[in-house]
Image 1 (spheres, rainbow, N blue to C red):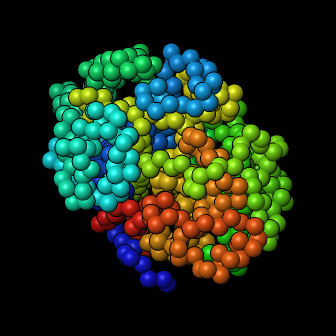
Image 2: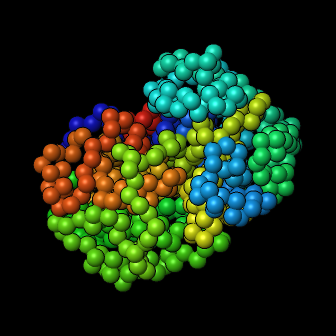
Image 3: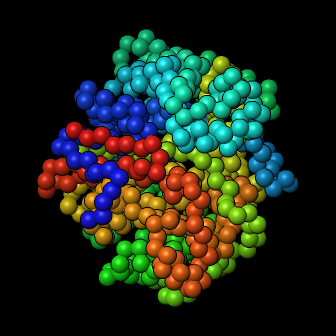
Length: 562
C-alpha cells in the first residue's frame, strides 16, 4: 500500500464527500439530524455554490444521479436549455458564443435540488439550505484556489461592476484566509427559505421555494436584468422550466453495473472508454506502467472522438448509444489501436474521420476553472451523486441577487448543425457528469469530479484504481493521473492538441520517456494541482457493514463519516 496524504475514512452509518470541507459539514449535519442521502447531498451541493463561488453558482447547473435503497436509479439533468426566443443562427457568423448574458441558458440548479428533495428527500428546503445561508451571510475563509481564480481573472471580474463588488471587495483581490461574505446571495436564499416556512406543509413549501425563484420576485429581477443587458431569457422560460428526469445509462463490467448520465453530457464517454479498455486488456499490467497508460489514453481518445461526433441533447439529436457501446462496435474500435504506437491525433469517430479542427497554437488548452462534486450514502443504503457547476467571471451577477443565471451556453457550438450546436430549447453538451457504480457485492459507489474534459479521464482512472487494482479509496484518489487533450475542447475556442498527453509530476521519468517514444506528446501539467480534477468517492461494503470515503487533496475537498 502506498502512503497517502490522508487516510481512507471508514464509518458504519453514513458519509459525505464534497469539494469544500464546509459543504461536507453541511451535508453531514443533515445526516446526523436524521435526513437521508438526498437531503444531505442537496445541502452540500447548494453550499458549494456559496463556498466555491468561482467554480459553482447557485443559479448554475447541477446534474444529479440518485439510487435509492430499493434499487430505483434515476438522473435529474439539472441543465437548462437555451431560451425559446434565441435566434438559432445568432452566433454562427461570429463563430463563437460571447461572454455575458447572451450565453445564458435557463438556470437549472435550484430546480434540480428541489426536484431531488420532492422525489426522494425527507426534509424541508429551509432546513436543507440553512448552512448555505449561514456561510453566505457570515462568510468563510478564502481558499488558495478561490484566490488563484480571482487573481488570474481579475480583469474579467472588474469588467462587471456587480461581480467586482463581490469578488474584488474594496477593489482588491481577496487574500487567502480573508473572510468572504456574499450578503445578496444570503438574502436570495433566505427569501426562498422564508417562502418554504410560510407554507402549510413540506410539499407546499418546496413548491413555494421553487416558485420564488422561477415565478416570483427573483425571476422578475433576473429577467429585467437580462432584458436590459441584451439577453434572451424571459419570464415564461423560467416559469415553464423543469429539469428532465431521465434513466441512467448503465452497462455491466466485471459483475458491476456502471451508471452515467445521458449524452447531453459526456458521461457515456466514460462507459465507452471503460468497455474499450476492457477489450484492449489491462489484466497483468502494472499500475501506471507505460503500456497501461498508453492503452488507457488511446481508449479515451477513441471515446472522445465519438463524443465529438455524436453527443448532444437527445431530445434534438439521435445519439446512437446502443451502437457505440455494443460489443461488436467496441471490438472494431479497439482494432484501430496499436501497442507501441500512438494515434498522434484525434482518431476517427465510429463513422469516419472528423474534419474542421486545426491544432491549437497555445501552450495549454483554454480551461474554465469551474465545477465541484458531492456524494453521499446514508444508513438506509440510499446514494447521491451530483456535479454542480458554473463559474463567475464570464457573465455578470444580477445586481441585488448575488447569482449568475447559468452561462453554460458556452458549451454549445456556435453552428446549429453540430450535434451540440446552439438552438432554442436545446441543452448544451455538458462536461459535468456524476456517476455511480452498483457493485457486484451489493455495495454502491458514487463518484465524480470537476475538471472539464479531464472529468471522465480522472473518474475512469480512480474507478479502475479501486475496482481493478484493489486500492483503498483514498489511495486510488491520490494516485498520479494523466489526461489526453487530443480532441476538441468542450470550451471555446475548442482547442485541439493532437497527441497531447498531460501527466502529473509523480509519473516516473522512464514511463514518460517510453510514452514519448511511442508518439505521445507528453507534457507536464503546470504546477496547478486542480487541473487533474478533484475526485470524491464513497464505497459501501455489505460484507463488513462499512462505508469507505475519500476526498481529493488536489482541491479543498474533504469527507466525513460516522
